[in-house]
Image (cartoon, rainbow, N blue to C red; front, side, top):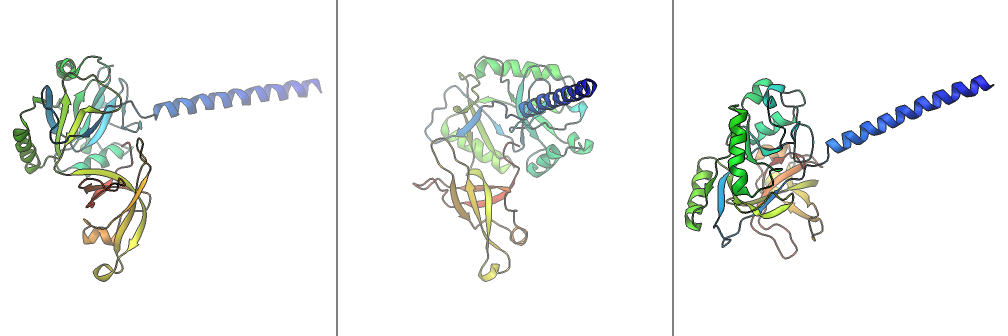
Length: 297
């Protein structure tokens, strides 16, 4: 009997040790998928000051955060880039966009989501670095440090985002028009005297011809008239934001015939374009743009 008790005790100890190890591994895994503390942009509005502001192109790709060891999405998920892509990158964090070129958003998303990296696809991706989150200085001070960091990496697929002093409002609008006409998405405005703050900030603003956002598909509304047998509209839900509850609204325009025949699935996310908000916070004149990646990608 004493021998049986000793054996049982050793088994229980081993089981406890395994459970502790699994729990620790799970906690490490959870920590690895926590969203990184990123600086997020607000919309630029007419009349906001442009003195001391840097302007760059807004790259339509996937946000990529280099934490000093791993490349991660905005949501904290590991990106399975080929080893050569990040070889020799510094230990300091970098913030940037994984970009496959103008008009190639879907291509960039597909490449980044693939857990078995496609070597040929990754050869077409560039890491456009626009900030150094851990630097500690103002953006005016971070910018030369960023350029030096990228020069030291010395890889053609790692590029420092070109920054220029903001012109006056009229010239800024011309620059936006020229960028969009050439296939770009829009512009980013970065306040030179601002430090990197891990939150949505007025010191980082985006300027686009139309405002856009993402929402989750709740349901399909059957079509009528010429759209009988196809999608009529989507019921969407906007996630709750600071001080604002979740909002639901119907999106019925902007779809091609092919998209109405095979609409975005319930539970997926879509990008829509709109012109301002109602008093209740619902988008005005919303129009479908495309299927969006899951939040955080």
